[in-house]
Picture 1 (tube, rainbow over the protein chains, first blue to last red):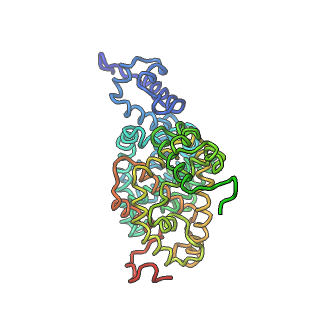
Picture 2: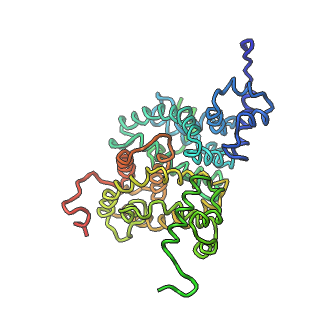
Length: 218
Length: 218
């Protein structure tokens, strides 16, 4: 049911986010004005402002939206920091393992890598974009991930002196660092690299996925 | 002694690198042409081209040069990946510990953080810059760091299943990730953060520096 006078259209939202992504890649963050985004998306500026009141929130959402609509997104979210706090360590490890091939495929796309470069590259030229991306999209994941890892430490799955916040930074940091290095990366190379990061972080055990896959754990 | 016809001036080099850093920060990588760099440095274009034949090599060297001239640079290099391969693990750990306060002070300057953002942000808009920075400045450090860490593993200072390349990526990655996050960072905050990264990576032991400092180890 839509509220009168405030129609919400997920199609319009998707077109706006896509237009913002394309403009950021083609013309940089400076070239992705609300006006240009609206024009390219084929909607009015009012439609854009109804959904995003600030340009930086729109651009941060557009960067975040790169992975949307790709199958396995939910698993990928679990792998990259949005796990349920009630997960056991074994379940967490298994979900990460199962999510990595799909996540790797998304991460190595030129669109994702280019937008990641734009986001971090804009840290000092357009600090409000990074601030919005950080506050709206990264911090909420950290808030969920920290207690899961703290429990893994408390239960003895990770060393007692593990610095949970730093482990998260090292895992995400290595991933970003890899994606911004020169050269192409195939999905399979990224899959193997992600396994190495997560294993080194202590979040992945070398084991076979049981028959029935991760659903066998539920 | 200078060769006739090819005078080399370290003062001119420093002025060129400084001009390139300032232009990258003020106008972005696109605005840092050889012509503009020469004009701002007060030298001829020929002088620039004698030293750097390609614009991307100049800009990569300019990014790298941010920390030059700061006391403790040699220690900072040891801490960030240029240690002598003959160092023992204890010496390495002690050198890192001693270098961190100075390194932290350099890393948190707005100039360094802004140039780091420019370098990684240019990965897809100006890929030759990142390629030059990577090949000329980052890869040589990794080449030195890897055998030092492999020996630390072989000698039992790090766990036998340590993934040395990934540990380097996680350490450098976390550092870059931290510097590109929103907000100011004080030198003392960065010093403590660096200690947490290096300790989590297994490269720093909690111990007191002996009387006489690291020179006591030599």
